[in-house]
Length: 350
Image (cartoon, rainbow, N blue to C red; front, side, top):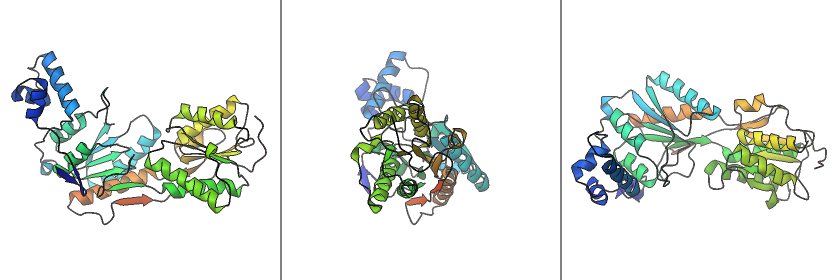
């Protein structure tokens, strides 16, 4: 067993166990792990399946001192303006620190739903001095692997609550939810819905909790039917907005927990011949470039993505130097950016 931030997790199977599972010798299993070509395709398939099935993580020949100027950044994807903002923040902070950054797009999953080991293998080969994870959902064995090999790492906006002791940087999501809802309440809205992300994700639950807290503080009744989850998916957000519009008493305003989902909300309103903000006010969250491009421009809660990423890189540098941060969780403030998508309630007819 290996301890990760105070929690004990299994270190994973040995290569001998993998070889036995695949019905091959240990040297043959080692060839597959190390990418050797002199292995029959069927044998390689059996070994690879055993590696994935057992959750084997390759033990590295890791020497961080070999390349002290290199760090890894693992992002959820590279095709969004969110990742662009994160990359910008990391690049600027890395330049100031004299570091080079290797970017990997996502922790890909196999058909069986288990994380692939490719990024771990590449990390050991490069000998990176530390890792930043953005929107990553690590397994217990991956946390254990990083801890076992003493590789410093920081989570940027982690998906789930990380194990105790893991350093992370995020935004004040609860306060952002409060701010968005208070803005709509101040305009005179009481029938305020929320289109949230995933029910189990940290940022989503915090934003919804802020929304509910603001309603309670204003003495406005919370309506369970006004809370819809769309998994941060634009198309699902469109469907959830249509469901809200079909309620006997539809909302006059909606707090959408990401700017990308707000695009889906706009689409749903256009389908019904409704306009923003005359028929329904909309507040987003993130302040991505899309918030300024759409018409009308989106009122949204800005979370400082580039600043979050830069802060995470600076914390990682401290950890690489042997300095442990006093607090494992750093939250940067959010603020409301008012544009043209909100106004006082003027009635809604669907």
